[in-house]
Length: 257
Image (cartoon, rainbow, N blue to C red; front, side, top):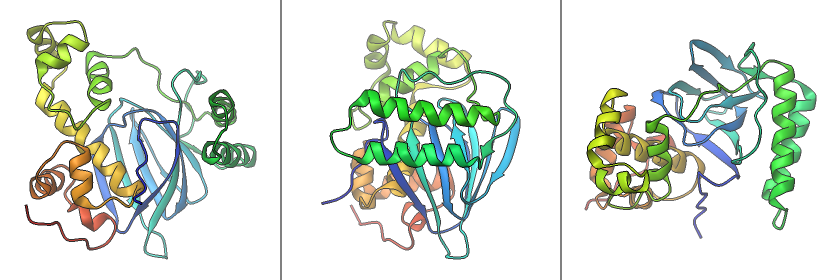
């Protein structure tokens, strides 16, 4: 059976990539802790950038545009383990002095959190506590998530992310957000984006995570994010990220519709 992780669930997921690729203006659905296992990651957001070496931990903010480059190591592959930060977990605040840490205590805490997340039957409160411990150790080295109130774009992304395969309209989303379609479109325009662009980018970001973190076929990933046509999905993905979806894992043909 295919491995089908839910990117919104507080889970530990293994990410894999077969070639160096730079992803620009990448917006994660939710904040997460990531450890590079093979290769290295270049990460930039909020005016700061760093190369995250193998074995180091970093934080990926949710709702903040990032530039990310995953670079394979000597094995020819890039690999990382990402641990989503559950809603409600308090993230430490303070000045951000670094984007990554190799503090042994933080790495040990991350290993414990991953084990607990993968162990069936672990109470959610225990999982959340384990994630909070990692965040506290990272904060000791100044690795801090940006703090900002949710914007209308972030609120919309959360609504759409709950069911990306749905045939969303701006009117539908506006009703969930308790505002008219006209108000939603106006506020999105003030933020420099639009409904269709937000939905398309969110679908591509989710697809990227599924391609890196599951064994779903390209056609199955397309369906998961609302595309009935695998070839149209592949064209959109290439336009967004500059690479064919199957090439992230190595050559994988896209089936004809």
